[in-house]
Image (cartoon, rainbow, N blue to C red; front, side, top):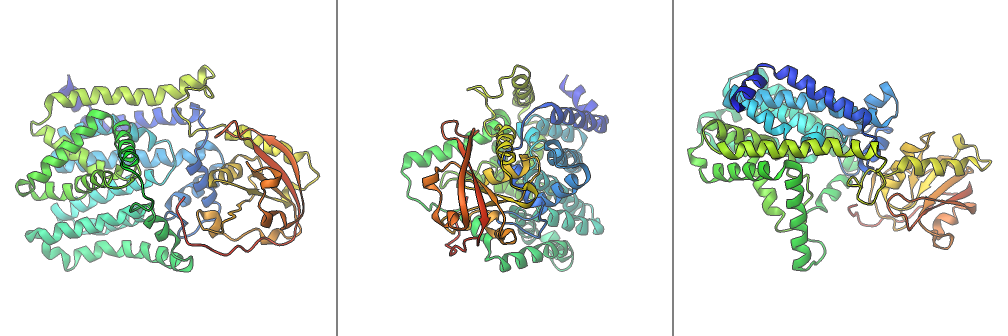
Length: 506
């Protein structure tokens, strides 16, 4: 049965991709899930296209900007790029696996990838990851053609793909570094360092220069943010340390599915211990993913690691796993991996739809806690704004608290107003502190939204206006016991110029 399925998948791969695309487009339109904080945050970036932002390169903002310019500012439009990128990813993933191990292994690799819940989320949530995964696999495909098929033009296309990956996320710098290591240790291909490698690097350098220039002009905020993720900055006891490691590994199990995760790690370890016996193609494949996967898994035992750090490295790890299976390894466990993986994928699709159908979206056991009722909250805030005599088109909004409050209000308020975030500490902890304040609104009114009482409003903010009055309370989707307060701030005198403090991460 499995062999017949693999043969059918390989012969009808385009039909499979179209069917998956149709399924995901239907889910996109019917799931009823609002944007998570990161999505609205990147959408707010897209309203001011630039070469870089506080924490990430610009690709995610550019893509959102293009789609919303064409189709409008709607939830499904913000997420629509994921369907395009995800379909391209699956096509290139199958072609790459086929180039390494042949059609049978390629079909297995595709089935394994489709059996991972992360592939569902990466084709739904518009974060930095969908473009990274797409351009990462494109880089692997063209690099393999350049290295092992002698395609001279593929060097340039690989460079363009890696440049796009670098514009998506900083981790893509691992691609040219891993390739450099491979070429240094492969005597037969070391000669490619004289010319072809530099042809590959040209587009990457062209993409990196504007990012570096932007950071030089903005106190290197992106590098300061990235640096803050590494090392143990606060002393934590061993129990807390184990909890961080547990959470990271649980994240891997949920997003890969348990059996696929363990098989991918096992095949990566097996290749590591038998590295000297691997072919040149297998060594290249291992360096471009499984090596970095093992490094991140080890790092998670030493410090707190973000759960998505390892995700791009599973791409080539699954291709390696499929190649090992085609050579006779993991025959029985692969079937169990596919069965359990597709069960988790089905649950990923079905649960949100059931919660929507039975009106259980806001129940206590709702699993998608990151998808809050921001639309309802924003409408309540907007109603309070309408109750005043303020010209909404000539006013602005100030958010107190997390950056998600600012971005969700900016997206879900019907008029998509300019929303600023007031950071009392003066620290730069989000893109809102990188952007200039509302100086152009001098003499205008603002609406302040936050969880603080009138007595808790920052003095610098209150003194920036002629008068601040309380309007109403609205529900807080993150904490029902701490509602948001809405204030009308009249006549901006001068926006506070807070002294900048050392950069922190948020």
